Amino acid sequence: MGREGEVVRELMPEFEQRNEGVRVRVQQIPWTAAHEKLLTAYAGGSMPDVFQLGNTWISEFVALRAVESLDDRIAASSLVAPEDYFPGILAANMIEGITYGVPWYVDTRVVFYRMDVLEGAGYAEPPRTWDAWIDAMTRIKNSQGKEKYAILLPIAEWEVPVILALQLDADLLRDGDQHGNFRSAPFRKAFAFYLDLFRRGLAPPVGEAQVANVYQEFARAYFSMYVSGPWNIGEFRRRLPPKIEHSWATAPMPGPAENRPGVSIAGGASLAIGRASGRKEAAWKLIEYLSEPAQQGAFYRLTGDLPSRKAAWLREGLASDRRARAFWTQLEFVKPTPRIPEWEQIASKIAHYAEQAVRRSMTADAALTALDRDVDGLLEKRRWLLQDRRQHVGARQGRSGAADER
Image (cartoon, rainbow, N blue to C red; front, top):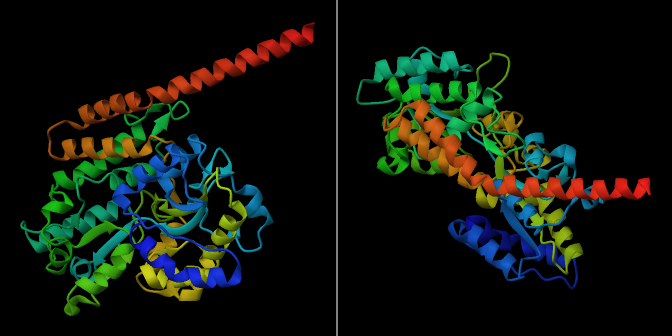
């Protein structure tokens, strides 16, 4: 998908040389069409043998019975080493204890920040706690003036409200992921913290599309902090003017407590095998090949995507790179979002109601009430299916008991 689909072809000749008689045909599709294309392929019985899946899509394709369980293959493999992956990322590939994807590259969110501006506000090191973060941003705002802001948090994105909630151990869903849980005390507290950043004037109430050029605005210190992902390491290096090349850095997310970084979300993409594939052995060999630290390193150099294997990080010197190492630290403290097929729709609802609350079109309580209501509606089919399953299990157990009595 996307850029990955364009460049992965460059890794195929070596794989084909190693595996005589095996040929790989790579079909590149844009991310914007990928989800629909895969669902269409599933409906038409033409799924790829091996394919890329965003981590949040795995549960949906498991529910469709479209992907193969990989536990037995991983256990027998000398090339895929579970202990070499970041635990939270590996967990995102597991549904009810069964592994359906092998992490290909990893993604999470950290804070990009202007070191010079932060130092000017009295902080030689990035803040580690929520209290220190608020203090640092308040100082930045006061020093930069009312026309500038401390942080950019595009209001059409769901990631930051969810990250803050996960840091407080909020359960986003309840009752076996059958209902929304956004009015729970931990989520309310996280949501209040998020909204307060806008109420205090620390973040502008705008979406990313309303910022003419994120990199130019960061360069002129319109905002001095930005929660973003690893793709922006390369973008910042390419797009920021040379005069501030040494004035920006990355840091793990601040958290509620002092003793460890705040958690962030476990993202990225994985490799999966189509359940109906007639070439599963060759497909698994391709996954093993792309999982080798050498190939992960080559893929990183081609794309800038962070490797899923720690051995590849060490091989490429990423663990000691001054901008990538914040991601290394953060990836040890990540949590997956709920692993259910409806998550993508739920995430869109979170973004929608967070924006309404930021713009003060709704109160926080009204937004969370509406969010729970809408999410309950999205999960109605899930509740029906689970209830139907329980009834069938109960009926089978009843028949078994009656047979035992006879």
